[in-house]
Length: 579
Image 1 (tube, rainbow, N blue to C red):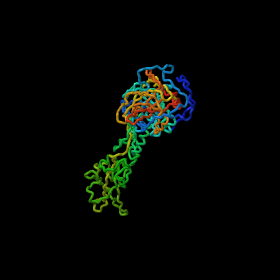
Image 2 (cartoon, rainbow, N blue to C red):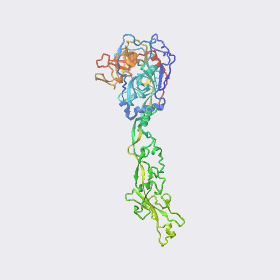
Image 3 (spheres, rainbow, N blue to C red):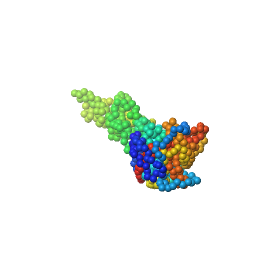
Image 4 (cartoon, rainbow, N blue to C red):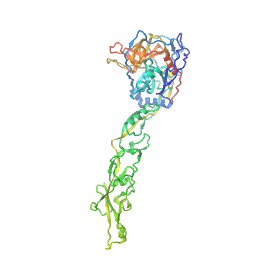
C-alpha cells in the first residue's frame, strides 16, 4: 500500500500547560498516513454496514486477537525510554484555561469507546480507543495494530469506525467513520513496538434515521472457485462498498442462474451463447457442451417445438442448443409404412423416405437425398405430414403397362438438445446491499469531549488506564467480559518486550486481560470530576511477569516528541460531514 510521508517543523500549540515547554526536535520522514474512507459515499456505506441488520455486526464483533497481544515483558532499572526534548502537553477539550481539581470518586470518561473493523479473517472485531483534542474536534487515538493489519503487510483494517460509549449494540453518540490514519514511519515499515500508536481523523457522527430492506446482490458466474475468490477479495478490500454477508455459492444447472448480478442475462450459455445451431451432421458433440451442459435425446415432437417451421429431414440451421444427428440410411424392409414419413412408437426417431427419380432414356438415375429434396420431406410436425398422392412419374404416365411405380431411399434420424448440468456449473458471489438513512449528529469532540496529550513525561508518574478488558487469564480465570468500561491505576515504569521490538516501553501494574483492552487510554493527571486528563500512552500488549497464571502488566509505547509529531500531522485536518 502506498504511504504518504508528512512532517514539517513543529510549532507548539498555544496555551500548553507545562512549564519550560519546548518544541520537539524537528524530524523528517517520521509520519505515515493512509486513507480509510476517502469519500462521503464511502463513509456512508461503512456506517450503514455497522448499522445494518439490526447492528448484528457490532453486536457479534469479538475482541481483536493478534499474536502480539500477550507478550513476555520485563521491568528494566537501567536504560528504558527517555525524553527527546522537554516535557509538553496539549490540554483537553474545555480544559485549556481550567485549573486541575481533585475528586475522591472516579467517573469514567465519555471520551472512551470501541473501534470496530473487519479483520484479516473477514470477521468483525473491536479494540479500545479514545477521543483526543484536535483543531476540528475529530481525532481518535488507539494502538497502531488496531488500525494497521501488520499480519497483512500493514494494510489498514477495513470499515474502521469509532463508537464512544458503546454498550451492547447501543451507540449513544453515534458512529464516527475513520477518514485518515496516521502512525509513525517505523511502525508502518518495521512494525516497531516502540511506535505502536495511531491517530485517526473521523467524520462527523451519524445515527440511523431510517432502515429499509437490504437489497440482494449477485455477481456474475465465474467458471472456477479461484476466480470467484479473487473477486470476493476485491470486494472486501474495496472500502467504498456497502456490501455485507458476501460469500461464494455454487451455481447448479438452470439457465436463470447464469447472470451478472444486474438482472441482465448476458452470456447465458456456452460461454458466449453461440451454439449457432449448425450442428453438425457429424454427431461429435461427445455428450457435453463447454462445461455448461450436456446433450440429451429429445423426442421428435419436442424437437419440432424447439424448431418451428423447420424441415426435420434437412440440415438446419437448428435453434440454439439443439441439433439433429446425421440421417442413417435403412433398408426398405426396416421402413414399416407406406407414408413418406412417420415417427416411431416411442416418439424418439423420425423415419422418412425420399424418392429416386426415374430417368428418361437419355438420363442416368440420380437418387434424391434428404438435403437435395427438402420439398419431399415432412414438415416440422411429422404427424401432420401428408403422404404424396401424385408424383411426377404418374403424371408422365411412362410405365409401359399403364401403371406407375416409385423408387425410394429410406432413412431414420434422432434429435438432441443441450440440458444444463445439474452439477456445479460455476460460482458466484452473493450478499446484501445495505440501504439505511443516516442523520448527522455533529463532531466527536463536541459530543464527548477530547483528552489532552502529554509527551516526554518522567517515568514513575501515576496514570489511570481506561479500557474494555476481556477474556481469561492464562490460568483460565475469566475476569472481564469486555462489555463495560473499566479502569486501573498505578505508576509507570520502564519495560521491554523484545518479541514486539519494544525496547523503550513503559508499563503499569494492571489486571486487564485479553485483546479488548488493546488501545486503552493511559491518562495522566486525570480529573475525575471533569472526566479529562492527558493521554500519555495506549495499551499495546499484556504480560504475566511473575508467571503465576495471571496477567499483571499492561504495556504502552513511551510518548515522546516524535509521538507529538505524528499527533500534529493529524490534529489540524478537517473531515466534515458524510450526510
